[in-house]
Length: 295
Image (tube, rainbow, N blue to C red; front, side, top):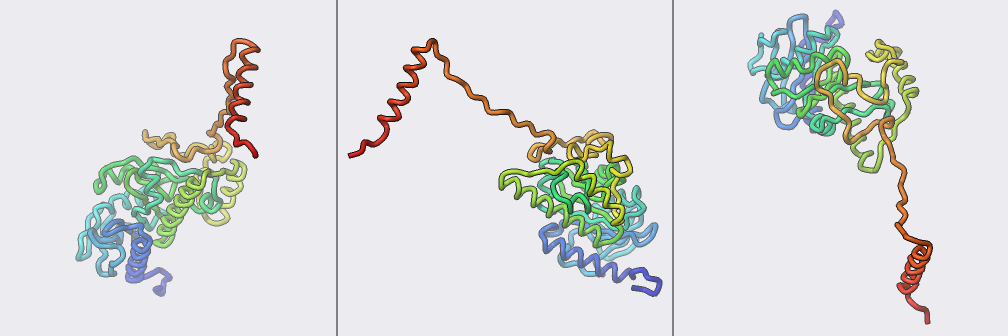
């Protein structure tokens, strides 16, 4: 730390490399996948280079770009997907860091266009809350970056349809930890589904958790909109008014939308009481004839 209490640029470079190593070690960024950013000042953003494994980066490999994506410094070329990070930073002045990668379990939900279920685990509700799915666009360009703009103002965790995730926060480790949390949560959901079922707690219990967040310094847009107007355990907040892309639950149906039809007993059709007696007698005799006789 420098004398003014701010982390030096070199320390930030080292920390970005550490985050890269963690992404690579966890299988969140295979080969050269993924990119990381940190806003150094109003118009300077430190970011990872293109075509370099996140597990083997060195501080000198990193680049600096301006808020339009123009490279200011760095021996290696900046990632083309830095525009995605900058789009979030422009609408969220509080965000200093973004992490984009392909964590397998969360990315499975992104590929399936499966909304993240709510009201299942307290830790997820408190530390992440609502998670959006942004529509698919070819990665690298401004159109791709623009897909997250409608959602970024209200969440720090976004699934990128058919692609991966992007998480953001006030510092590098905060942004990275949100990636860990979303993948761990998705893995638990997949395992629970394999066991047989996912159980949900109530809207009332969800509201209790959400009300804890301000005391922890964690923002939740549902508090700002009013919990009484939110469908806490049902449809995602992001289904209406954010974009025309509206993923529907297929594998993880919220409890309030699950309808179990009662089993129906179909009685055999018989023409008369005599026919009914004969049918029952035939079934009984058939069962007896099928049993082994005792000596």
